[in-house]
Image 1: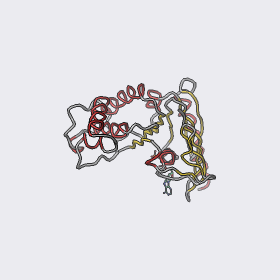
Image 2: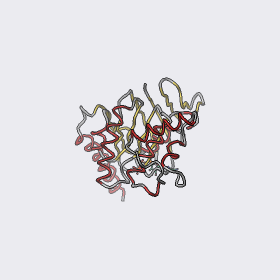
Image 3: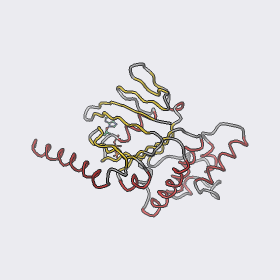
Image 4: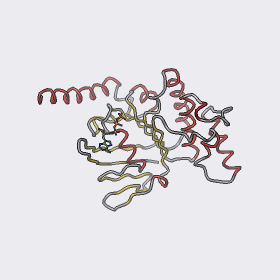
Length: 243
Ligand SMILES: Nc1ncnc2c1ncn2[C@@H]1O[C@H](COP(=O)(O)OP(=O)(O)OP(=O)(O)O)[C@@H](O)[C@H]1O
């Protein structure tokens, strides 16, 4: 299994040029606010389109600007969990998880039960999203994504809306989950600690580009943060000199 993406995209005040690759090991993408982390994930998921580039999953092209290939998000088999993921408010937990699953009634019920167990949601089947804590809602969202068996899991700041206690609990649960999940995983965050707990590789982004990449065993948390600090210090100095 592998995922490769080389994407370029330009807005009026921002341009992005990012290349990344995963090969069965969770990749953590670290970067300051506005550096293009979510836009990169959205391009991989197919919610946004790059101006140019190539995205391939297990040797299948999902996007290729030159060959004019662009597979729809529904056909990419990519699960995208973002901050404040919206569950269907009028559906129970059980029905939320079942929403994306295909199969007979028994198959769907079996799959939902497996996901409830995997994410420690047993007993909450008949509750509605408004009757759940933030951490429980995030776990239902993750169960709903995993229920359709995606080949790629994109986690976009999954912990940022949670308080410290729930964040630590969910961090441990996702850590357990990643041990048994066999697809490609990309975690986007501002918080290096999450990457050092969950991921094998780190990619540091700044100003729409890749600043540094490698195994977490070779790049220390302080050197990853140091690279980021340097870029933003320089940006600040340039701006101060201009004014
Ligand atoms: N539709 C758009 N038009 C113009 N600029 C945009 C548009 N969408 C995103 N941007 C800009 O692209 C940049 C990257 O956005 P992105 O959401 O990827 O940032 P991020 O690194 O995920 O930030 P955060 O950590 O705050 O979520 C930002 O500067 C943003 O303002």
